[in-house]
Image (cartoon, rainbow, N blue to C red; front, top):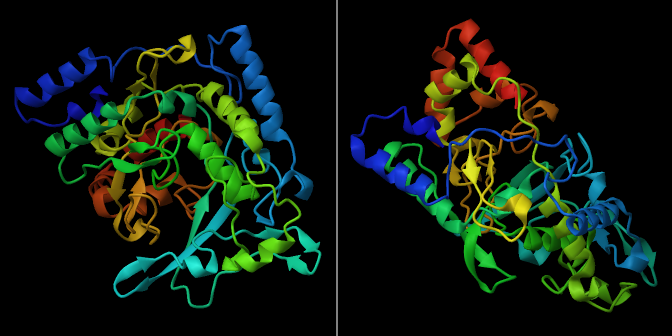
Length: 399
């Protein structure tokens, strides 16, 4: 966390705030610890936790069909279908499509059409119904694509307390107000309270368990106690009379949802890159990239030893930032149309496309697409000498 704070000269008060934050155990500039390989479980799990990880991984890799509750519309038959690069739980070049429109000056999710997420596939003929993939309604004026993100290390992110993200936002507002992000505050359907969102491109999901249940419904069409209501294909709820599985929730008791949660909770973080302290890292900081791409976070006390007060290096503040024309136009959770969560940069060396929609084929293109609160860092990058750009890019590529 010492990265971008060192760039500013605002007198002693910000540094006292930072010292208090570190002293509270919420954030730490501590040295890196040994990381597993991509797809391995967190180091330090006990035998029972490793068994839960293995069982969850098996379920994550398994394929569903209509008899399991798949559909009636869906995007794929298995979690691994979209999360496989680098190992089970990685990302992919797959993108999903979202849509909406502006009605009376406000974002309209077009719920009557089943918005905002397109389900590309259907389970076919069932009784008198033929379930096909959905299409973007002709009346939609906003169409956005979202790349599938890796899940490595998300158990560590889930173990960071909400207060840490609030304090990061407060420090950014103090030290770099033009780039400062804000916490996403969303409904936590597991606890029944408001919580800080940190998962999804819009930071619209507050916990891994809700994240698992959300994906189970919205990517595979399988209901659970957290999301018990079936998605109506293209908004036509009358078609559900032909759904071969009418016993919602289909994941009775949330058994599979918990297995997905266990797998993600115990999935190891990306192993650190080789250039953490080289000249590229210092240029990354000097260009202002570290203002949003915060290097390190620390988990709170946790009954799981592998998650207990661990420092990790996601290179993200997990806050919402106004990205100007780079925003995807969709309102979701607490996020406005132009806002996106800072994308973590750990695991970068596995990626072949960048940005939320995969539209950038190089890191240089991704940096130069930054707008809004990311514009100053883009301009700082453009001012670097060619050899400095190469050093900064080498650092980011190594993460």
